[in-house]
Image (tube, rainbow, N blue to C red; front, side, top):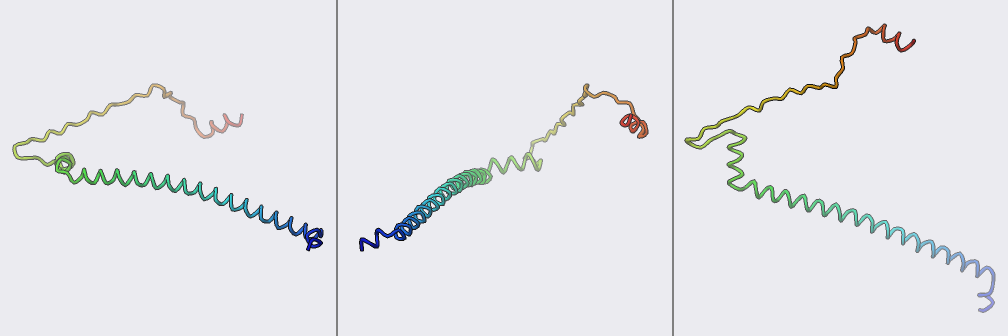
Length: 118
């Protein structure tokens, strides 16, 4: 039995098995690290989705209130209660004058080509 352990082929086989075992452990470690990163990303997405769901639920609860319904009826449908008058004001448009615009001389296509070529 001691001769079998001291044989060079046995040492080579043991070394190869050790290298394969070490490589397998390294691959498993890499997969574990990659999985943990993916889990962190998915947890962040889940957190963002839960925040969005919460805000949508709050908006839904708000839309069920009487004040919200009355605001929609008054503002968007322009309805009124008895004895009320609706005054709708027009927003004046402001004309913007751009002083940076310079007038350019209109050139024909032939003049443009001559300018480019010569």
